[in-house]
Length: 75
Image (cartoon, rainbow, N blue to C red):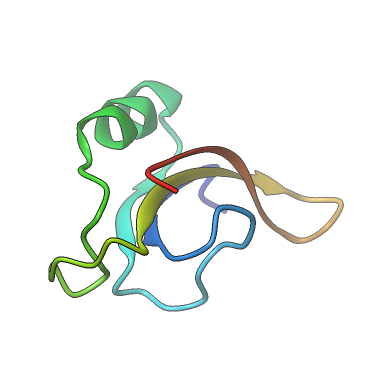
């Protein structure tokens, strides 16, 4: 399972279920943070301007069997 995920997101608490939103998915926290820090808010999953979208960094929680948002920006 990939440990970290960075997404363009219209929710600061839920992880998107689609693939279009993913900016990074993998096991490197350093790379996930780099992508998160460099990602611009206000752009939707299809790279179109949308002020309702921010960026989230999530980690895998094996107890919940799901990703959990740990950081967000642009909301």
